[in-house]
Length: 280
Image (tube, rainbow, N blue to C red):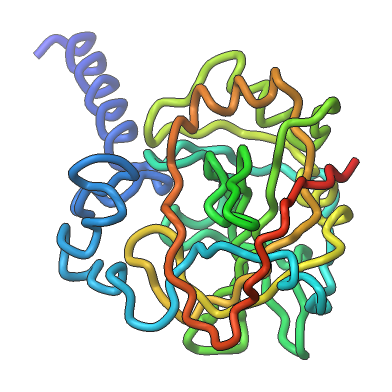
């Protein structure tokens, strides 16, 4: 074979292998396909695959509709923030997710300097992502968007999960922490399984605005809907500008699960009109 042709063939072959195999941020193609609308939507998740049977509900599923009274006795959290950090932003086919470049999509590397501490337990941030509209409701109302910061324990062999839910609604001011995220989207939305490098202090900016939270034991809001997740939902609504909303809506579209039945005893019965107080 002509040496030049052989080298050309080798380069093309290696390029093909690297683009199709070496991608730790690609979701497993064997995973059954689910969505948030239509025939593979939330109401049918438990029928799509036997590993999703928990989505039908065993104990408490998430998200839920919250009442004003739920925030009366706020759970005490200590959130440690991180400074601007080199991360990756990826499109996993269901949402846009931010995580460290180490690790994989199934097992993101933990941020050891971004922690949530509650009741003597320390959780470390694994990744965060967004849903539109919000998955949790307050007094029957959803908001424009909800961010989920997913934490894991290191000491517990079962790797207990905790999720901080932050609500966003339309306001006069843009959210500075979302700028790096939106700038990338405005230049070119990511294809499924595509990722880009991003330097952001989003976690730091958002954490500082979280003051009042309601805690309950629920589940993941996507398959396999694992239960036993400790939720912390903030009532301190963050502001996004109309232009930020337009950009985010273009890529997130509709990716929220509907609210689930609350099983807690003594659920508040309030139906007071609720208007979100935007935090600046």
